[in-house]
Image 1: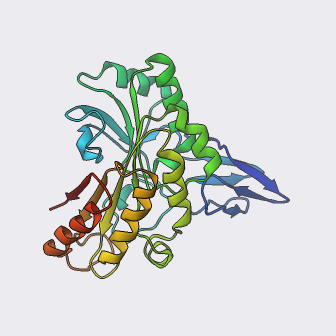
Image 2: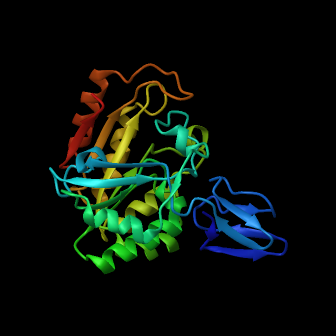
Length: 284
């Protein structure tokens, strides 16, 4: 379902979308880099509002969130679209393509959250929730108004502008943010973005909600101890208790680099632990 989007302004015959740091200037009939925000005759529409491609009751540790309500389950939902083009994306069938979906009104989703057994709340995940913004915002707000202690979780690449982030955060309890690298080169060449806005998202979110960080260490790309150290120092300057998940890479989608060396993963954990109190290895 399409609905009028938030966070855009008119520029003569074009529209400037400022939901994310791409700051797309979109001509009539065209979409932004996320492929789900479209300019139609002077109005910007979100094309994926309420469109669900995936829904599952997952362990909270799968997000991964190891230190937010451990040993619980959370209803996890996703749509289609993403503002990154990561070559190793494990969910590329929904992030890079308009996948089959089913419309679920916000009231129905909240009802499902509240009636699902052994469920602590809702996690927006699988594709990038920030470019599903209008639906995520509406559902999170309605859920909190209906049941204040229900949990709202975002699993995000962190590539969102500061204004929409701050507007959403009062309804968010926890985030897992991908810090994919500590270099602009990697963000530009592998992900189609830039580093600084992601660092800003972490700085803004960490004091407002529970935050855990995931870094996928891709062989031949960002598998250097120096980069792991830079990431760890950055997080430690915010809070040494921020959990860092160092995740092992395996070939998928467009990237065929060999799996990350296991010994390197252990050395990376040792380096990160010099600065941070909670460092975990994933995909091992």
